[in-house]
Image (cartoon, rainbow, N blue to C red):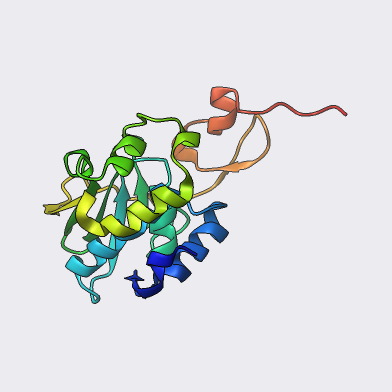
Length: 197
């Protein structure tokens, strides 16, 4: 555990415990997930504890794990939507009113924190910036490298409910018939082939 984590609270927990949870879930205390914890913490603070929030995450890297760890929003329950926009940003919003808060890692603000700036903009190789040093800089910076704005979600990314299930004539597996006459795996050719061994 990093020394700076001993007196810090993050997402309602001691920061040391947050780092342990990240390591257990993600495999190591990834800088992106740690920054994501600060982002989730800020978004939760401004949206308030009584709001039943959904999440939109704008990158596939690291940030979805922070949302799944520190909110009730997951891919499986459909409360988190992940966009492959490669922007390190998330929005927590009230699913009833669509009002919420977008928090992002602000490249302009990272300039005042050279280690974070170099890591974020990939200006140095990973081995040139030891993880312990980078984590220390993130724990020191806290929200100073983030920005937050009030937003209204206009493109409501609702996961459609399955109304019926069909059996694919190609593979014999169950699928959502809204995909067409056969499942997406058979339609697109799938991502695997059967191993004859």
